[in-house]
Image (cartoon, rainbow, N blue to C red; front, side, top):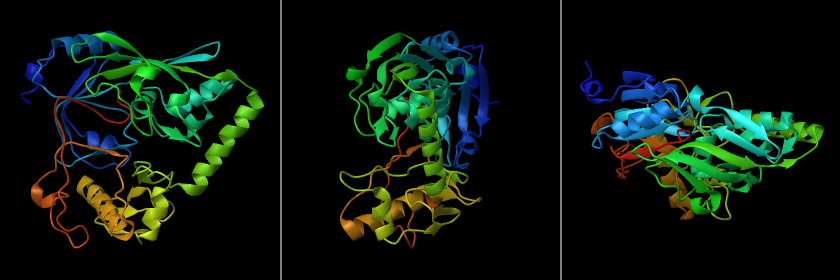
Length: 331
C-alpha cells in the first residue's frame, strides 16, 4: 500500500495512489503522482487542504496542455480540478468561469450569448485557471484584457478574492501567490454581433490548423517569444526544424512545438528542448525561456536531461518541486 495514502485526510473526491499522470498530459509522456486527488467540489478541496499535514507537498495540474511531468514522477499529492470546477455562468457582459473550464468552451459560450472579446480563448489549448495564472494569450489578446478578478484557496483552505490589478499580469506571467490554487475567474467582454463573433472563431480555428501540429502529441508553444522576436524564427534560423532526440522531435510544421512521435520519454522532450535552447543561444546570443511548465523529478541521473549527450552536452537544468507547485491549467 502507498504509505502516503494513510497520512491523508478523508475526501469525497477520488484519491489514487501511483497514478500515471504523465500519460494524461498532451505529450503523453512522463511519470506518476505519488497520490492523485480529484476533489468533488470547492468544499471538498477546502476541507482537504485545511486538514492536510503541512509537510506533504502539493502540486496542482490542469488539462496538461502546457505541461511536462518528468519521468521520476511527482512526490506528494497532485491535485487536478474537474467537473466541480468547470461551471460557466454568464450575466450581462460578464462570465464567471471555474478554473477547470476549458478556454475554448468559454469562448463558445460567450459567442452563443453574443458576448465578444473572448474569441482568442478558442486558440488556447488549456483551462481558465492555467490561463489566468500565466496570462495566456493568442491572436493579439491576453487574459489580462478580460480578467476582472479571481478566487483562490490558500494552503490552509481559506478563500481569497484577488483583483486583476493585484495579480500583476504581464507577458506569460502573473504575480499571483504561487501557493494559492485559483478556482474561479470573473471575466468581462462586450456585446457583439453573433455572426461576426462566429466568423472570428472560424478564422482562428483555420489559422491554428494551417500553422500548428494540432493533431500531434504536443504541449503547445514550447518557448516564450523574446522581446521583438518570434521564438519559432530563431529556432528555424538555428537549424532545429525536424531535430530529433529519442522519441521527441521539433515539429516540421511549427518549430516552437515539440512532438512526441510515439515513444518519447519526458527526458527526451526536455533534453530536446534544452538542445534547441543551446543551439539558438550559440547562433543568436538569445537564451529562450521555457513556456511549458516542467515539474517532478528525473527518473535517474543517467536518464535525465543533465546527462552528457552528443547534442546537449552537460548543461545543468534545475529540477524544482515541493511546497505547492502550480502547473498549467491546474489553478
